Image (tube, rainbow, N blue to C red; front, side, top):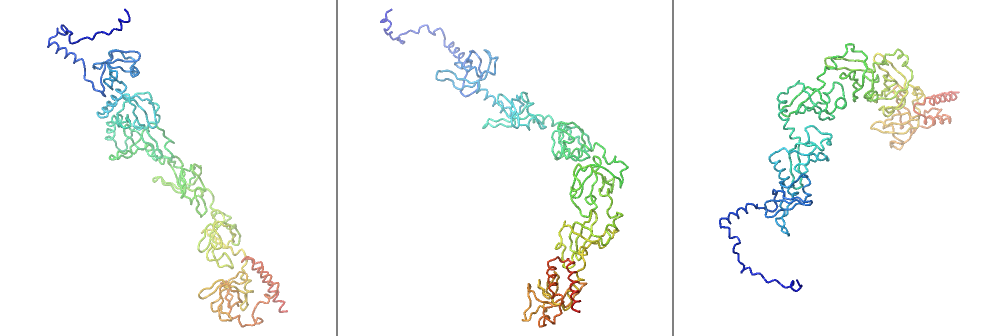
Length: 598
């Protein structure tokens, strides 16, 4: 055939002139209607965005062909059927209609979306109808487990796994577990399930039976499910009870773990039951006899016992002789000293010590102990009267100050009182704190000893001679001395005389020659009006000095001697109780007077 003949256009076909004689003429109207109905029944109404069931009609390497009863078959990628390795022609599966006809006129289906939509519908249905779901535990996460239900991942909190606390979540991974949906959050695609709720329902009947038959004194078997600092919680078969730490053992324990462990089975007794609050108090030590009932008869008042310190308080310590049998060692029974100290200075917890039984009441189960009784009472020592004889000197520590004096501890258990008047010969001490402080060391001399009444009178000023014997010859009545006014009152003024001695003068006797009165801080000549040795008081006046010629003033002649002045200056620098200087001064005065008479 030539090229020209091939390129010639075909004549147009005239359909109007074509005859349709014989095409479909064999069907009557009834047959045509019947055939149309049969054809329509082979087609199903399909809407987009819905899940329908389809039958596998063909399988290739890359695609699965499905018939959903539509005018055309749908094609789904074989990747969406990985969970069905045994898929074959004729199997029925659910698919999601994405589009009835795409640009190529193809029906678009998705099994993946169908699975998701169906899963959420099943989850919602299970939640609404309270249906139990069989879940597969995929992995653990923080605070619980991730489980698979209907192809959707759901969260199983650790607190919802079991009625008892779970310490190891890994043991559940890879296992199947029955759960119920308890919460759905579509906004976050979050589902929360619980296995505990199934267990609680199973235990409800058992719990109610236990509560109905529960009574005080009943012994039950339980398992320790939780442990705290104050006790343990025991599962009694659906009902929890508290075993307080004080009811675990008759002896003292620091923590329940000292004697018990988690998941341990043990028998306990019901101590109390609150039916309204459903609280059960349990006891373990009550199943054993009280240790006081088996306390040896040999232990009596005065017996020596040995034990372990289990507690130390401000007022004393508790000594455990045997588990459940304790005695109190009061702080006053720890030392013969009269000054109470902190018990921790004597002992600590877990110390093994001995003590003496002071009181014992087996019925009340009380015992008082003492450790100072293990040593001799210092007041009953045979050498006490010789050691603390009157006039003997000792050094002690100031333990307490009062308005009337101070207490000195010479040795443990031996205290003495130093009266405020026995602190100094020359200074007028209003309060002992002006002279000494607590814990200072002070030397004293024994003034009086009463061993029967445990009394010891001490003095400090008696360590030196009484300087007033010397002052009597220095501050004779009529003698004149340079004095300084240190204080003024309404009626009297206080003066400072040589050697640190204080004197007094009435206000009217402070008048000066110009008619004014001397003020605080002024140093003037004063005349001795009275010298009261027993009262340790010197009364002076300035007004009687004025107008009296110096040669007629009654003054100690030794006061004018240079040697005497040097001694006076040295004496003023010395302490109030430096009697050696005063004695030397007295001797110089006496020697000077003898020379004057000759």
